[in-house]
Every structure is written in C-alpha cells, then in structure tokens.
Length: 131
Image: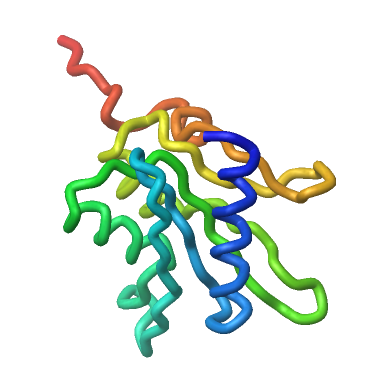
C-alpha cells in the first residue's frame, strides 16, 4: 500500500461518513475498496461497527483485507479517524497481524496506518500453555 492508497481509503470513508455519520473503508489484497457504515440499534450490544460490512464482504468474496480505516463525520470539524475497536481488531486479525489500521496522530493529515500487531502487542493468540 502507498500513501495514495491511504488517501483513497480516507476519502472513500469520509464521503460516506458525511452522509451516514460513521463509515469504514477497507482495501483488499487485490486493491478493491470495500465500504461499510455504523449500524445503530436500541441495545448497544446489538450495534455494528462500520468495519463489520467490509469484513463480511471480504469473507463472502474470499478476499484478504490489507488495510482498514474508520471515519466519523461531525460538523464543523469534518472527518476524524477512529481506531478500530478491540472487537474489530479481533475480526481483522483473521486476515493477519500485518493488516494496517488507521489511527489518529498529530501529522498534518491527522492519521497514519499502523500494523495490527502494533495495536495488539500481546494478543491472546500468542499465549502458550505452560506447565
């Protein structure tokens, strides 16, 4: 992935978030962009993160996600990158710990991509039984 790919994902998620409030964009290994939106529900545990749509589509089409970004839109500030929550990090981990996840930072563009392994340096799947 290149910086241009990063910006393509940010722009795709931002355009959708402007209409929907929260949106995600994921890039597959083949370069396809998959989109999703936050699904609200009356019970918080029934809500679906915006990343859920691209993750499901990738599974359905047997594609591997290599990068994911989630964006919230709020006036007057516009687009803000939201890091994938812990549950979505678990969902994205099936595509490998090298999946790049967008996180906010202090750079001029306001975000950067980091490998999932940086966000979860001690994941449960690395645990080894001792004894």
